[in-house]
Image: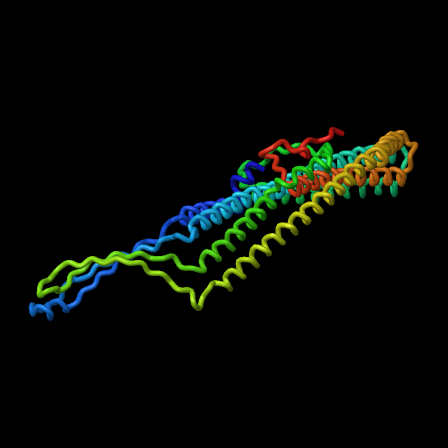
Length: 392
């Protein structure tokens, strides 16, 4: 999972959004730039008869943010930054689940390949026993040919398992950008732990998706306040320094004043309505996200509990009896006490049961990963109540 977060472009995309929001936050509280106006005319030359054109006016204008809009913009930018930071954590949860998917997929395919190899070893053993019994006249040629078919079927299953394991390894290495040919992967041998639902529900309020949605509501609320503040334009002070002809002489003239926009036609009512609708939408999205995550959390927890219970029952009621039948049939066939059809049924039944049990283990771990994602729990930042396994 750590490797996934380091190499995934999706993570960098979310982090780039944080950097963009940081820039917007720095920009949000800055005053508007002043305006400098330069004016030139030939008025003084005509007045005193000297002629020519002179630079006779310099004016500096500065808007004054007295409406409090800059402070509101800073608060909105802070909320946007917090929303982007929560988005990084939410993206991390999605990447952790994807890492779990490829990891447990590789576990399953390697376990199935090992099982296929064991099946081929058993088929080789039965084939040797069959040939010996055929030579002794204790086994017909037809029955011995059935053993050859069992052995060939086991060989074909290895080819299939090798291909699927190779594809799973390729997916694993590509997604995590690994270079080693055979990464060490833990065996698929145990079930995940089942945490208390109440514990997970108590942590749900800290879910990054909900944190991001709440910050979205906060940003939208400040957007309404900004829209209200924008009903009146900021006043503008100005200072002008110029030259004019007074009493037949050219003299410096200083003037200053204030410009105020009169909101006769545009009171920004449409912008305020838009901002209010945006805030309401963000609030509804937060409520929908809370309901969705709560429902998904309960479903994942229920499904995981069913898978764990099913796997335990399957092991004690199906897998262990199938192992006993297989061992007894193997020994009985070697001693000439078990017919070939009974042996075939025992072999097929045992390896099918083993395969199904491995699938239940993998499904349980995938559901545990989905449960962590629904609960907003990262294995990399906190001790997860669904990270430990139950030895079998």
